[in-house]
Image 1 (cartoon, helix red, strand yellow):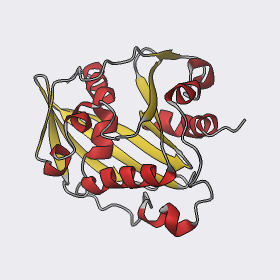
Image 2 (image 1 turned 30 degrees about the horizontal axis):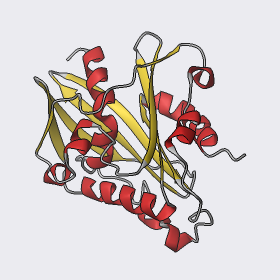
Image 3 (image 1 turned 180 degrees about the horizontal axis):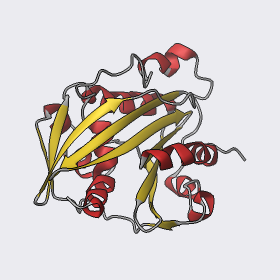
Length: 234
């Protein structure tokens, strides 16, 4: 699979596959690497658990743009929902989450307020995408936790996207200490002898859930900027 083809498939379904996919591959995950269970709002006295959810229009204003990212970035056109012909193989837990989780339409996350953007970097040699969701802190925590719990059902799985079969494995990695809850994974997409590694980090801060996915170095570079903009007050 050519690298550009891999990028198209990956960023079209990355959020769904990462959030609704499967748990670490043969390499053991670090204990509590994403520490979602340890950071439930009821357990840590989340001071922002009663924050009022934002509307989708507000979330769109808080997405990163090319000015935030710097030189070399281009905003990718929004993908229409339901445009991917995707079949998930070998992961009943993912299948149970329904078509949205498999195709990337809403990433399997059933939150009412959402916004997303994707960017290519320097001629398509790297990509990064951002998703924002808003609901009550408890609903964000429970809904995202439910998706991540599904990951433990499969060590690896396949996605059939049109005529291309992609093998996927995931590895839980330590997430940066940001927000009230956080999760982070590396996903390896393999097809026709080519591999592509994608990093995804999700952070819940009060009533906002931020998901940044894409080339690992770009996720690391822009995560703090995305979180600062997404959770700005005033």
